[in-house]
Length: 492
Image (cartoon, rainbow, N blue to C red; front, side, top):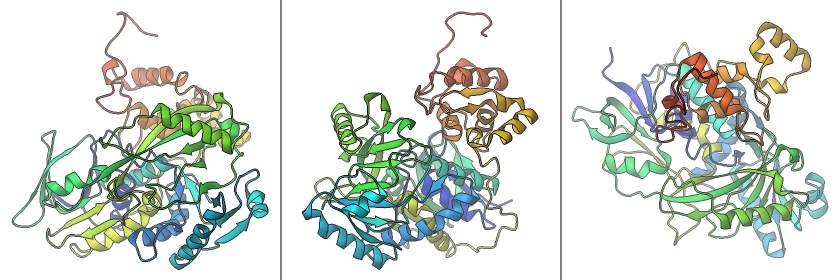
């Protein structure tokens, strides 16, 4: 029996899960620690889901290198782990003459970075790609795309789990001790202890806290919130491509933009505002008003009833408010703390970069441990690659005849069947919160936002899985849905 783990990853976001999957290709005893009840509940699920091309990052930086490499890896990765993605391209729009030099600068920068197919478009060419878009010119990057961000994180995690990685959910690290004979002892707030030879800090918004536990003081994370609106699927197809404004100097983000999603909704956002609390996911009246106005400017046919939800995400920035802009990623094998691999400031394009970052980290792990191939590794994620509602009618009929659960609709808005809910509940990681089910099955993501399906999912969890009212959790132990019964007796 091995003494502890070979490698432990702190952080179950998209980067941590990509690293876990990459390490599972090798004969290593690997664990991942995540403080939430499921993977991907932080920054990794609260973003635009954009696959960036690499035009926005200075040549020679880690951001540029891993973004372009990650972009190239994404097609095969998403096929293997059964995650939706689309290459829809992006136009970066010059609103006036002042923005034209920015377009040419981005084109030159992107070409140096190795971004394929970049082209400056005139107004006619721009509107041929996206009818009705305002602006005088645009830079077109055909390799840009969209992916389901929480689906990508979950797919990476579940495939890593199937290949032998141990996931420790609901475990928050409280201290890290460097052992005299090598390796680390990690203590959790729950009282659990875990020993490992190599420790990888992929804690995102809390990467600086993990650094300080390990004795590293030079990094500080500055949380920067971005707010979004989600638009109804009525507008599906209105936006043919990603539409971004030409970026302005020292902006902490890439500006408010319209983003079609792989599931048919459109996102408006994100804003960019430095905040004090790392997990302050509030949506503010002022920002929501400005997003509605921006939406009406870009989509004149937009109605108030099309705004079905809002949400926010928080970027883990290394640049303070008084500096603004963006700093390079930190991806380092610390020579002062043997076996500590540190990732900090992995904000956008972290989603796109995740598979390339995983390759870099694997190489660093190889400097500490032998990398022998895992002969049992399978790159293919188990489970169904489809949503029932997207299948041809004949296939639907066949599935229903074989399994009646496909004939019962639980989520009316998204047309999600009982079997898809059961599959989501029975996920390999054992996560059973309503958000975990939602991110796997898309239940509760339609116009009624769970009004129809939540009681039905509650009934399934109660009747078929034996959960009591106190065990129904929205997201974590701090968000219970019920505290008991209104009246005693049998509940139908």
